[in-house]
Picture 1 (cartoon, rainbow, N blue to C red):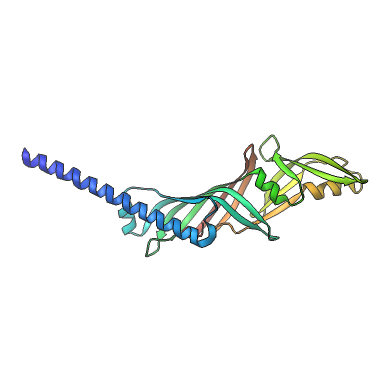
Picture 2: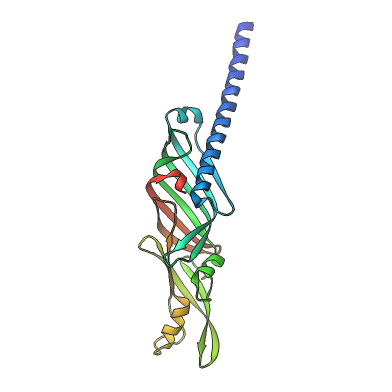
Length: 233
């Protein structure tokens, strides 16, 4: 009886030590990956969070393969095709079936998917025309407000626009209709202020935009990719 009890206690102690060692190891690996992401230039202004899923971690690490790694970046600055910057407030990426590098500081995922958020404040800054962008009242719609100079006066007008994804990397904003539509010169003048395209460059290598929509908080984008580098996030 005493021997059995001793074996149970020993098993519990060893199990506890294994769990503690496993958690220390996964914490170390998460820190290494986060540091590599920050040094790659994609760490974001507000921080980088890495979470390795699955237990135990040590058995995954021994095979140099992880089931899933989740990376959250905040304040990511992307570059538009004309050299301007567009801020992504949050980028969450899930990496599946990751083959780790030899020093556990990086790896490549067979596939990855994620979501990104762009606030209306940041979209307004990216418009470059002085237009203000806000929620348009339904998914996929935004309200664009801009001032137009006409006969020496500045007239401010708001239009409801549709926001779409073009060619997998370009955010397009187009007014559904504008005041004075059909009058020569007026429509072009208004659309010059309200309509714009912003091609995003500098997203994590291997990830491409697959869809986007709008809600009251801003733009919601979906990203997908295959053979994606874990530390280029």
